[in-house]
Length: 449
Image 1 (cartoon, rainbow, N blue to C red):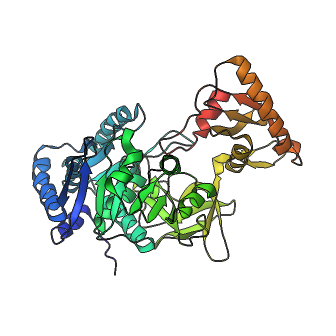
Image 2: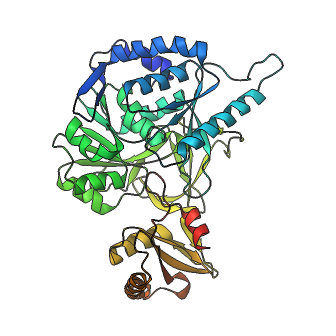
Image 3: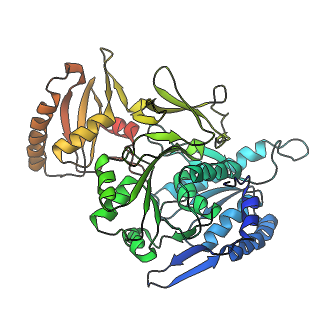
């Protein structure tokens, strides 16, 4: 039976009884190194004593894609410190946000102290504080525990197993819950070797360098690796999450004989709550063990899960009868498999009550126009298409706009007026997106308005 760990301390204690390699790394000159599970546990245990003597209530740990960074993360949490992971690979400004969040977290913790200097309910291990992606509203800080993160790794293992002999390439940012669980914690919890990516500029070459058997990634990353023929022959499984995955990408991977799994989850649920199991239907996902997923009357997905967050930093837990309302739309098929339909805030509500599901429009229009960076939003009461990453030459922009408008005319054919695309906006700059490639729709709307 797959063991479910209740804390990082319990997990690290288990490392001591294992053989095999826990972490493998390499540098830009091709030199590699590794540590065993026992060595890794001893490093963490030793560091816990130093951390208990020196750390404050909240620490920002800078992840440098090395063993020392991982030791720091585990040791600080076990020592009772809340941890925010700062990653030099994430967009500019994130690490400044992390520092500000740490100060806010410290202040929030201090305000909770009673007259004896104690924080009520505060005992044992610290929490990990992750930022939401901020695709539809300002980014919030999510409080996750080692228990919920270990529960997420366990539920993933029940759906897609890894173990001794597997090498998982860790090239996702650990400052995001998906990267933390699926590219690091899952592998360590169940005996795989975690290979730490070398550098953001070399991520497309890391599969050929480390020869992983399992590769968690986001669609844009996997697509780039395919385009550069950078997937190694030993690779047997690709796990895709973090953003919608196209059928074209899945087909390209399957042509190479690679099994494709697509996962769905949120930062608030410590990553995954559903994962595909049927190779020919990667967009049909089965709920993970313990995940009680329900479709509400308006089509919104709600969930109750042992992987749930403690709440948002500085806010009361946002639950209704123990359930978290995800803001995502979905439906169940006759086999009980979950299908996603987009975000509630990805839906444009028109004056006549008609609805436009923006991701569906964008996928269709991307294929029709051949433009990779597009978004559908509202302007002056009508739906418009915005195309980014193009040109700052007005003449070329107007020519492109004319060509896209012709394509839009065919797309609009047969649609009611309220559901048609009424204009095309050409921009020289890229559309605003998160680190995982999701369109920041609220920010695009603000820019257009």
